[in-house]
Length: 410
Image (cartoon, one colour):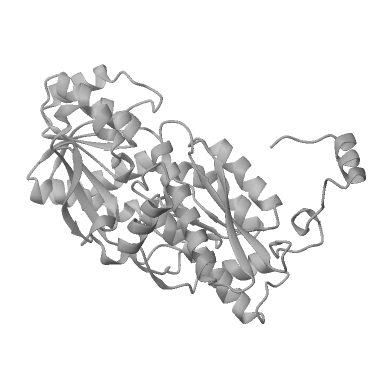
């Protein structure tokens, strides 16, 4: 956002062209802003990669949150309140995400935030939001440490009470994939690769632990640069390892070319990844030989859920240019969770927002429960989604096709 000079602001005030609203005053409290027609506007911030390699997922998140706000307004769900979104681009970069978080915090009309996509970006935002008691609900973060602390495998401790998510975690997703690869696909030797980022390395680690526990053998490991495009050296290592399958912890911009180059090197084996690779862009990058590649993703296929039929129809009717992508349903539910928390607070305060709305909304989020697009939406004591369902998808005829849904049985 550009900063206007003091002279320009003074001139605008003198001309009557600039109005100072509640969202810009220091003593206004967290009450949203006056809509000018006797109602209050509550802004839901949205943080996601809106440009760059991961924008397909990010734009789906933005549009789906926007749809939730519009539907709440149509239904007059919270009387006297109009919801709107403020979407900001983090470019999948933690530094940009942290800057966006500070921007949201400084705008008192922002009473909740949906996002981000990346766990590494979430790490940079959590404390900023928590210090301001501004609730954050991610539709896509899967890193276990975000809700259960860095030592989550030994002792779970919730680091930030303002952080929630509607997606399940890699503590479940990685092992779920390992069980499918070992028990169903009957692959006993795997080569594990990750992109060194929070999401990718964490996912690869939980997959590896479970795969070994089942009796599988890891015949090689490698870390790649997430900015790289040439994976020929890694592809050669995979071919020479005798691996029956590759597991990749990372996202589709690298997974697609990696799969293609592994097969070009002569290793005609499937690449398996997590929800970060489950986007239609993957097939464009991986090419025709992507058939048989696998991805796990949170929840059940939105298209197959009776609870999602209205969402799919509404999204299409709204005319968004981009697909809702892998996290559309979860983004809608994340935004709706914020809306439900606002409703709880307004209803409990005589039909209006209290002066400490942010703190009250964060507190109310813990008890939010509703039937959402993705199924039953509620949160456990760590802020994690209580819905633990996952699905394995396979590439068939150039599309992701669900082949197994269920929950991890550890």
